[in-house]
Length: 107
Image (tube, rainbow, N blue to C red; front, side, top):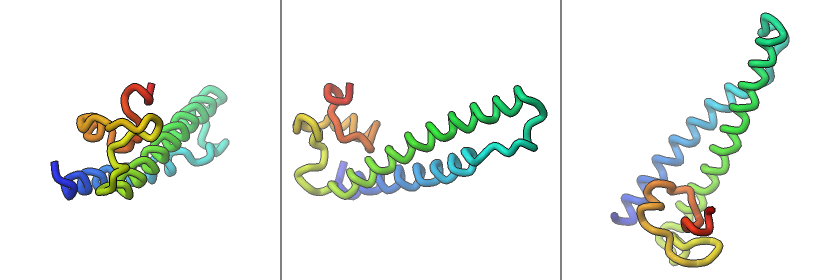
């Protein structure tokens, strides 16, 4: 795979992640008291809000990793584990382009 193809892969993943972040932000807004039918419904809405906030944080971390790896593309640091410095397998880069750790260090 060429650098231009990797760049396209990373840019596409960044766009997808930014859209997902926008959706999660909309779904993780405050729970209005008038939207609840009863106490159980309100607790369910609060629980769902917590799940969306966790998904939002995870997506924001993925976006940071994608942007970091896009900025490293074409340099000697691209594809190197941040922790141990060995080369990250190419398949891992394709499956998890936001990752900056090899499989062993990611555990």
